[in-house]
Image 1 (spheres, rainbow, N blue to C red):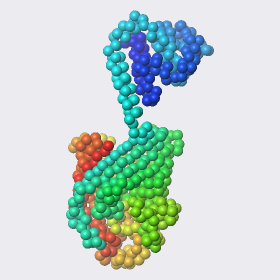
Image 2 (cartoon, rainbow, N blue to C red):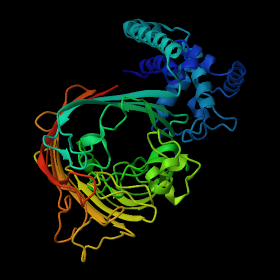
Image 3 (cartoon, rainbow, N blue to C red):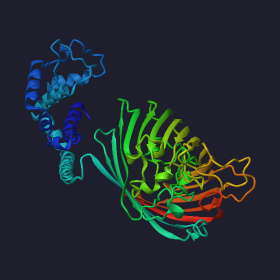
Image 4 (cartoon, rainbow, N blue to C red):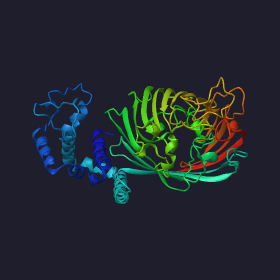
Length: 554
């Protein structure tokens, strides 16, 4: 294709693409010259026309800085001598190595369009040759303009997107029995969990998230965060719609490496990085990477700072996070149980109650910090969390809640590796956590033969290992197995204490039925799980359970 053909196509393409690149209000007609004139103020166009006219050249040799050895010499010569639409600077230079401003580009384009609209015989032949293609492109742009106009008129919001997720879960744990109540809670049930997120961005780099959530799970065995059988997609909402997230995240530096999050309802794990490649999204104990003392999903009033190293795309870098979340409840101060305010709320008292506030140790404080390294296919992190009265760790297996005179220090070590290409070898994720609790009244692992005199929470540890095969058997499907021990205390050598040596194993296979629908049948085996309230009076549960989890995203 010779230069003149290339020039005509380039100008035609500019006339077609420019309207699509502009905003909805700036979409112009298909004609290239009209697009430029509409995009700029008319007085600016006139100014640049005058500038181009004064500095027009008739020969490339008039430019003192253009040499025949320059790689674009011939192209520039053709533009000057055939079309006469190249202007130089008043000092007689073309300045070919200098970046162009948008105004300079507009002036050059305008000058060329003036010349090209003079239909020469050669140009008419080109227009006839490409008439069919240009007609098709013009029709497509006309259709796009119509659709954009309709979308603009009917859009929900210019800044907000609605994202939804609905899960229906069929499952049960045969034989599971809460000894303290004498009731069985393992019969098969069919429950739902639904989440609607309104994600708003004003700059493209920030996020205001408002999320509504509802469901109909009972506390046992799947809906209570204190239970080892807690499901990731299960809460005890009793068919009531709650606002369960309300926070704003925005960058605090120009490189977008540091972000600040502040919210009246925010979760600490959403202000940190979960170092894992195992993602069944079924049993919560494995969703928290086996270290639920640190990654305890504390939700309430909070603030957090997230930092990541500024590295080239695809390269590994360091990450660091720190956050403060208030998530206590009325049992943080037994003396005021009868006068607690706001107990009807899903999140209890916490810092929202002015009786306590967000800086009172009775409010249930969670102060979390994390340092890690995230590479292309592996990562590792160390996490720490300090807790005060009223808080606990997820999936606590009867370990208890911190009382007024107690505080906790939890530490977590997590790492994962996954193959670059999926195949027979799975990704490997592992985590170990330890939770030290102060003032464990009446309890000593060396002296006591029973936990019946203990009050409040106990020191504990937990761990897990997870293996996951992506694209298992069918592309986009996944399979995995995870095993480990949820939180357990170091129990005395004698006495009837349950939950001191718990084990959980999970097998799942996730079918990607469509782009928006997944079906995940899951089996889990439990051994030595706490089957009552406290460790002293509970019995141990051993058995097999499972769920079929179907999730719709929209």
